[in-house]
Length: 346
View 1 (cartoon, helix red, strand yellow):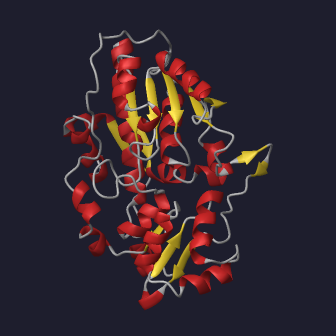
View 2 (tube, rainbow, N blue to C red):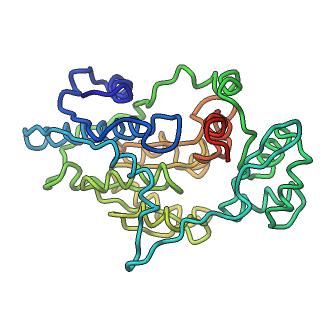
View 3 (cartoon, rainbow, N blue to C red):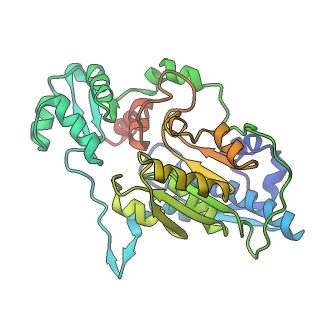
């Protein structure tokens, strides 16, 4: 049975409702997790859409069709896969930094501080003028106007935000800027001759992917490609911090290499890798890699036919397009955190 979340994805991918006839979604209905949001239906729809795309590619390779089955409860569990990870038979810590979280600010408002990475933590603590102590942070945030603190932390190159309601977010200039955008966009960035799929026994066999993403959304994207046979090379740097369990969980099926794009030699190494790749996936803020010579247009000239995948927190247009953000920051400013807190305080 087609669910409503999948129905919204189909046109974005250029498919009609008939495409969903090959999909069977089972396993119950929301709520599966303690949330007012339809997490189960949405996760099942996303995985079903991946299955449809992979089945299309497999049909192009082999002429054989496939049916897709998704269990909603299992799809929901997949969103927390890092929490079920074991290494050498032992649980892997999923603890976050102790000062990261939501704090009461002035006038009954709340502020969220994203402090998992040392540089963002240092920015927040510098603005607040306190040591790395949760009680000291709580007392300091209570003296701030939440909106002023949001802007001060962003100006200090940190990450965080004021907790907004959904109605407040709907009136925000950034929400207005992206309101009419589709779920995803496919934009032609250059000309190239058609290329035959490499030989192989899996849908993405022989497809080479460079993964320049961090944390969760982008790494999960590249891991999904690896799951279906792509050769994925994750590019990170020794100077870039990571969240251990997420790094491990999204690293399945990938090779990895360290490059420092502040160094001209490493920039040239990456350019060489681009020439031999098919997909370049990046999750930095719009313009960040472009400033180092790795914009979509530059890569299309360097490697005609390349697929440039770009993911970012707030979209590629609007006043917040270049603002630092992570999943939890987006939830905070867009009303998700507020709505969750209304029904499940604490």
